[in-house]
Length: 251
Image (tube, rainbow, N blue to C red; front, side, top):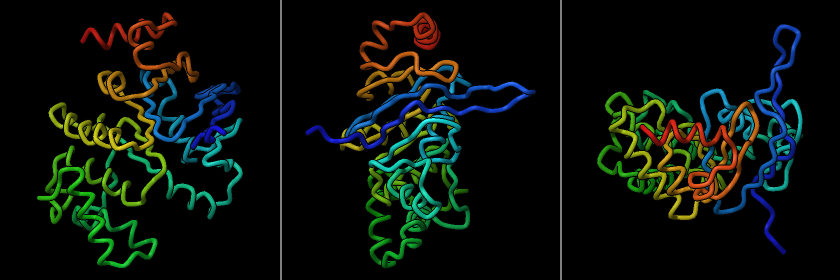
């Protein structure tokens, strides 16, 4: 029997009311993410990519459809059940959301302290993860002493501390200077190589093409294409996909 998807999205909708009319940020979204999948989500700004990610972990409540995470409908969970589910669903934002008064090590230790892990164990785990993301020499640095790329890598280490079953990335490099983008993408490629399940909203077309196992192209709140990266990039079916890729790949 085939293993059930980690995430199964069924007819997802996010609708806003504006001036007596309905505006759809998402409509008719159907998506299954299996263990080990790396989904690249691409599309122009305003296509609904970030709304999709925020609906998956219920930072925004859908107005229709269902999101099943490990068999449980996220839309029907109580607040305590939702908090428990989110511990298995890592989230990396555009901004780093670090605690400015804590060092890199202490930032990674923080969620472990919240779940009651022994301080010695938490410190050891934090050091292992900071080493993994290439920050073994910056463990005692405060966020104000770190570059944007380093801050994002601390945020990734903090997310990994909870051993998530899937990691959601919402344009993790968009707030970085161009020279810092590569160091974060390198860490993400390493995670992909280690078998982490990931959904990555990104404007980095090379990452989507070379690292993803599947690519989604979104436009106007719908998924226009969902295929293997070589098919999306070499033989897109939709005119809007071709137009979008021609603009990005010609840069």
